[in-house]
View 1 (cartoon, rainbow over the protein chains, first blue to last red):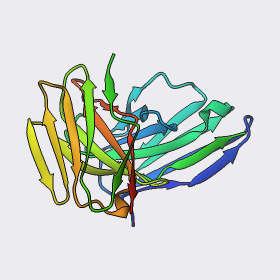
View 2 (view 1 turned 180 degrees about the vertical axis):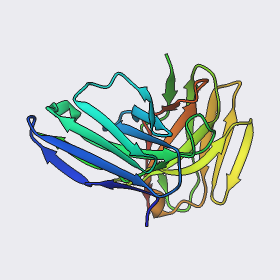
View 3 (view 1 turned 135 degrees about the vertical axis):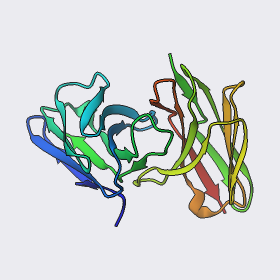
View 4 (view 1 turned 30 degrees about the horizontal axis):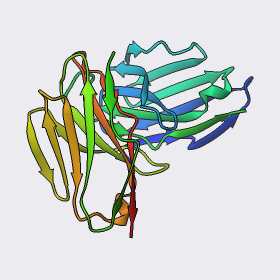
Length: 114
Length: 109
């Protein structure tokens, strides 16, 4: 079983739809992250949760809404998205925010907005 | 602003050696990471440098010079499975990870 699991792997949604991305980590980590990865661009940090508390929101539009019910689960709720939001959405976890340890990534959700 | 620069794409031959460079300008420095990402898969951790010098891990080595804002990832005895994107990331003074756009490495037989 992989350390960080994301579902679904692929998602196609219309601009008026509401959908959610799910991330689960089995590593006992305390920090979880959402990243957006677009072709040929650096990873963009969207949200950070440390011990279930949101510690970072990098000016992300409100059509993206994160939820962290516990240290093992992270959701990204999507509504009224735009075509430019099509990208690979990666979840990651680490022992704790601010610690000099590596992050472990899930395989991502490939999102296409039509 | 903060910036990480690495080449967009490199090509190398199976069995050869390749060096992927990364230069950075960040507000503070708390370590540099290299990740490997195969197409359609998760980035996976390769190496971490916080002090100057060379860290060797099997066929892969990573070098850091903090005074020059420079790192490289050295891959030896290249194999076809090494075809992937290689991501450089720096942890700044706020412990935020600043990412490069990645270097796509193509290995030819």
